[in-house]
Amino acid sequence: MDVLDLEPIKLNGVDFSQQRPVVIAGPCSAETEEQVMNTAHDLAKRGVKIFRAGIWKPRTKPGSFEGIGSEGLKWMKRVKEETGMYTSTEVATAQHVYEALKYGIDMMWIGARTTANPFAVQEIADALRGVDMPILIKNPVNPDLELWIGALMRINQAGLKKIGVIHRGFSTYDKTIYRNLPQWQIPIEIKRRFPNLPVICDPSHIGGRRDLILPLSQQAMDLQFNGLIIESHCTPDDAWSDAKQQVTPCDLFEQVLNKLVIRDAAQSTENIEDLRGQIDKIDEEIFEILAKRMRVSREIGTYKKEHGITVLQAARYDEILKGRIALGERLGMSPNFTKAFIEAVHEESVRIQMELMNGEKKA
Ligand code: PEP
Ligand code: MN
Image (cartoon, rainbow, N blue to C red; front, side, top):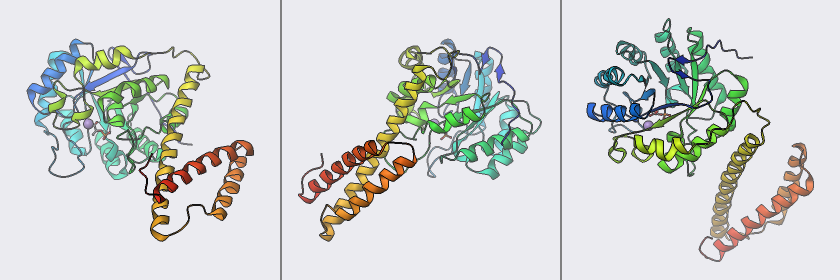
């Protein structure tokens, strides 16, 4: 069994295990001194205690803004001095760690692309050896729980005990409403395995859109996450990275934080709201998968049309029906239910393919 030797993360005035969520906020990237200071003052005025800003940015393609670099750390130092907020940033190399330490950064996080790379995580762990500082580890871009836990272990084995995780969703090739699929069952499992590990949700990177920040944050609260890390920028539309998902400090409070319903964490997980929250999430996932099945079905329809094959292939349908009923039974579901379900799904697939054959527009 994997073991972590953890200590609670307690920065003065911020307790990662208390009921109200810990809020980490700030821009995706530090861009200019003015943007950093304006955003920071506005957030501090509203009560934010931990400021985030990316100094080195992992971008998908070269030529995008790759972060302001160490210059921005001077602004972070100013943020700390002028507002009293704790400062945090992403580190991806040993050099980043040394630079961040030099400028008094209070908390570091490991980004999703880095968590996916054990060599990089080990390099960071080695650079942090002997440092007593909270480290948050984002999930790897791919939905691999063991890889995520492996990163936690590497940091922990370097002697760091104030560790938390950030759930920022998982990359997918499919188009969905999310920039990164939440796949809540993965952070739920990490919470189950490590009950003392603070779990923070990053609705900005999961949703990729401003309007998804509130519903995602609410879901995280209903799943008893310990906090939120939300991208906030004084003029979000002008942001040099992740413009669509950033909100002003004012909107962060008026449109998100003040609208969150925080339920009593003392209630057990058997609590009905909690269970309903889980059902909502599961249904959402079922629907995403069903929609994907329909897309594949449509592709098969196109193939059939191009090759002059009939829509209904009786033998194939029989095989599906029998196979799925057997699968359902193995998973403890009644044959009647599985049959009705797969018949409804198949009926819709046939309808889609018939429409294609007849050259009609998709529904
Ligand atoms: C970020 O927090 O700005 C960031 C780059 O996030 P992620 O590593 O989750 O993509
Ligand atoms: Mn970002």
